[in-house]
Image (cartoon, rainbow, N blue to C red):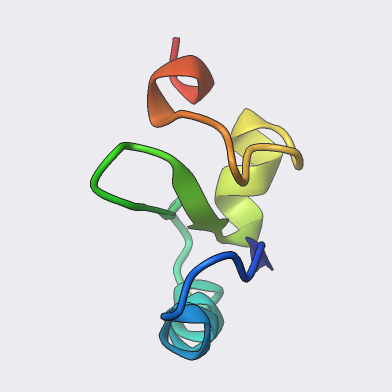
Length: 61
């Protein structure tokens, strides 16, 4: 899972990321402002590997 550890919840994000990699669908984890905190491998392939730290609104346009 692609992620940046920029929050106090980084260990929880990492754990969610490890679980997300078992899914066949793309999964994005965002904060309340819509900034992508983490993306599984499928999402990174669909939207690009550099989507972490970008606004979800910019990613899905």
